[in-house]
Image (cartoon, rainbow, N blue to C red; front, side, top):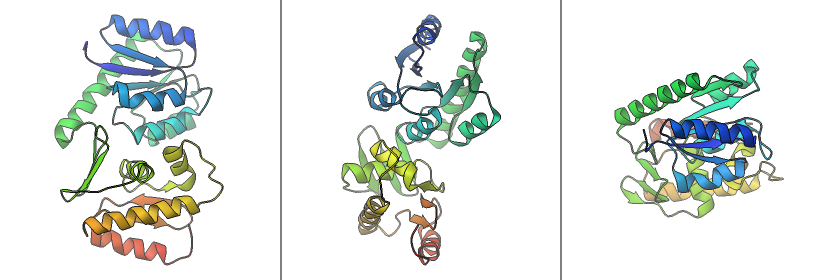
Length: 250
């Protein structure tokens, strides 16, 4: 347990100090930050085994941050928040959180939930035999620790923006991501002023993947909504892509 690393995202200094102290006494290594920006920046350096996340942060909503973090780490997320409305609980879980603990909470219960979530995450990794920093969709493999992409065993050379866009989509196969969400995940803000920038990068990304292999997962345009990367076979997904792109615009 001494090697288990927890990233604590909490803007209340007293809460962060007391919780970090208690968890460290139980054998965890705790890194605490108080903003969403810090959480995103530090992920690649600390590689946490689990994230404890408050919803009410000074620079972003915790639900938005949950979506962003799931694209850059496979670490399970437990939301700890005084926002206990059912809509927050349900939305948090749908966006990728592994558990939701209401504040104020009992420390023993929180530690029990942490242990349970870590056990589930370990079983999933063992069953999939996929390294925790790796994203795989069909024959597409993205290594987040190396910042590399391979398709059918061949390297795919992407720009930093194309790479972040691919990570955002591949982290949630078959889930539609709007341009606003993609803007938040790729550039760190939601209002791009126009969807043209997203469309241009999607087009370039599709072209580069197809040049490497015809078995590339298909990036599907969902009219009126956004984009998704298909986990199904390339031929079937391509048919879906043609049908969705037949209508003008997104």
